[in-house]
Figure (cartoon, rainbow, N blue to C red):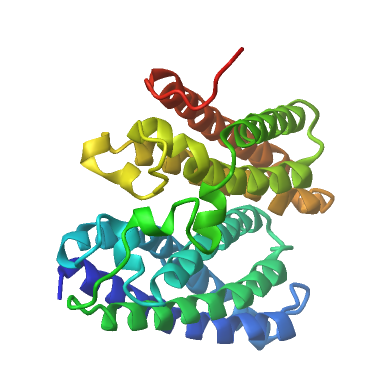
Length: 332
């Protein structure tokens, strides 16, 4: 078994064990936490919350890194399966590949939101968000456990004798499913939607930085921008990179043959979306007296970082379009 798979399985097992322990503690927090109490039980909870929070920070970071490692591992295994040209074929070897990827993406964003909540809460003496962040933990925990099981099923089901489907089969206008639907979008409407959402995203972020209002709106638009960006990469942006009107794969962009341009797209997009989501996560609590100044400063910084990430993504996407000799749209 490749070392990367072993690392993913060991990480998943470790994270699952920690999340079981943390979930039990989180349930006690929701039921028993009372910052105004001087009881022995309350003091025990306060002491243990430092340890649990530290462990959870490492867990969330491990989950974030496992997303990258999972995609990298799937890509590296592509030459071991007949029909696989990239990570798409490997993920399609059995029915657990793409669900594992989607769960990891969901945990990435929820985990980033938890880290931001934890950072803000730890800066206040009365921990006003402790129930909120441990409530979020109890939402993340089942996803982590599900991801561990689905990922294990995926790796155990990898059979090199299976002939899998290549990315050209899954991401084409004639294919069934989401990949086929996205590949079949017309370039012009998708291009207009892509840049229209880009203007909305950057404008809403700039409005929040300038006026300190609209944090939740910026978070919602950031998530919309993420979804439209992925759809745009599949429908038309990848075509400019491959210089082919029929190659829509979002994973081949990560290959050395295409100068690893996928990393230049995905990294700033994921980071920007996470920070944008973080702005909307903490701004509703800005009315709490002990958090007012903390959130005022952190939300401002996170919004600036989100804007920087989105700006890099849209600038790089535009560069890929302009440098390509492929002409998808005739301008008259």
